Length: 73
Image (cartoon, rainbow, N blue to C red; front, side, top):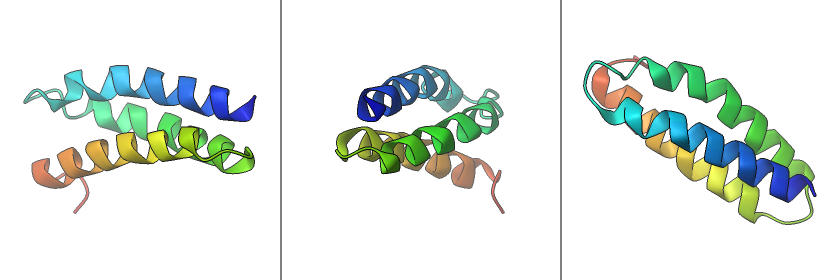
């Protein structure tokens, strides 16, 4: 059950992250990061790893976009 919840949180955050790839919308990644972190934590508590791994992939996409745009450093 936690795996499904983590996957759904990952899908919601992916809906936020995809439009944030457009220039001048990169700030939306900052709204998605806490949601992704919650999904990773919930996915880590589940017995399966697919929800956690999906959230980590979404986190990687958002992190790379923030690093390219100068948002992390």
